[in-house]
Amino acid sequence: MANYTAADIKEIRETTGAGMLDVKKALDEADGDKAKAVELIRVKGLKGIAKRESRDASEGLVAVDVRDAEGGQTGTLVEINCETDFVAKNDRFVALGDEAVAAAVESGATEPAQLAETPFGEALTTAGATMGEKIEVRRIGRVTGEVVTSYMHRTNKDLPPQVGVIVASDAAGAEVARDVAMHIAAYSPAFLTRDEVPAETVENERRIAEETAKNEGKPEKALPKIVEGRLNGFFKENVLLDQAFAKDPKQTVGKVIEAAGGTVTGFVRFRVGN
Image 1: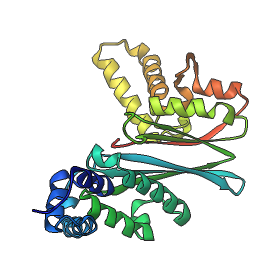
Image 2: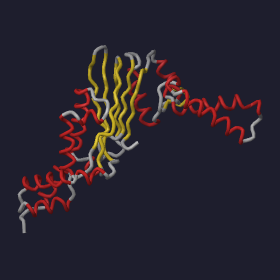
Image 3: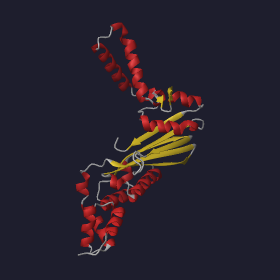
Image 4: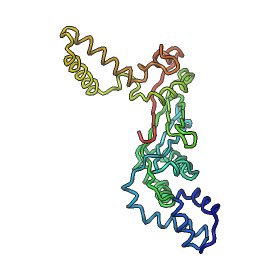
């Protein structure tokens, strides 16, 4: 029987993210040689790529990078996924998230497929093989502005950040940008302003509001006012500047930014799996 200890198993699990049974099998095959066991896990992992592709990667983390750019700053968010929370909190996976966002910044990639064409793509494949899980970059987001403010939220204290927000603003807006970013993390607006809502979405919401009011037996004369009221309700739920501010619901986010004398020009919000 191969000579290894529980501490050896723990060390290899933390290094590779592999399951306990896989680690034990590798150590048995390697006669207790830890380095060889890790190599075996990697080799077997690479052979299992096709099998992993069909599995669901719904855990993971969000990584952020904010740096100076011409005329201001640029912020980049990357969501990278794995299959289990065990791997999500693994130090190697967390480091992989940092590598992913750095590669996205340096390459200018806006889509995971573009990132896969960089040297990071090979690192991603190797990580999946070593950890024995499907690991993939799901999406990349970017904003540029005079100032970019980030907010990262842990939904579980034992896991890395699973919600990330970046907000672009002018210098005056930066005074409230972190509070706005925290609000975005909690209330997940879909649009910055009403003007950003696609016309077809507005028309669809208007149609639904009118049909609903008719089905409720509302008077014909009252329909226009009812429809506009319900459309405004849609905007208040989905448009950042129209939402009631989390810290002071008596004010909208737009009014809070206006009171600071500033402007928010864009934002990106990622939540793992959503």
